[in-house]
Image 1 (tube, rainbow, N blue to C red):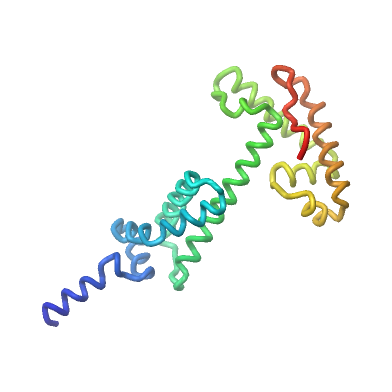
Image 2: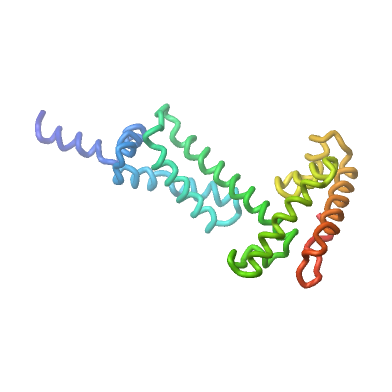
Length: 206
């Protein structure tokens, strides 16, 4: 092979020019240069997609970073089928869903315990109270009749709209709203001894 031909082949084999399959094979061997090339290739698309999902560019950038970290860790098990882009989008979507579920759990915790509770250090008296409140809150939710508990959990934790809950449970939308209201009222009464500052954490509308 002539020197110009060798040089041309070397250029084609650089990470910037290599295909996704070749780069992933190198990433599986922990080639950080190949990984950086994949990040550069897809980072803008990932951040734009996650920004649309979350409505927050800072969160989107964090999730995109986690997406690529998971790609790197899972590279040895990755099977190339010409679908790396779809694989990345699937990782990103699952991460966004997981974060949304976590946000909903925190939202319910704030409703049960008060917004400041999640910021208290675990070892502080307030943190210990928070942990006790969490246990009491979980027990209070579990003690609700299923007809109230199911729509309440679907709405407050899973984030389902009233219409979707009604369709899933075979109820009228007004019935769903009524049962969620009753569930909240029961929880408020059960947790009344644990409220701080005498204020109700439950919102008045949905």
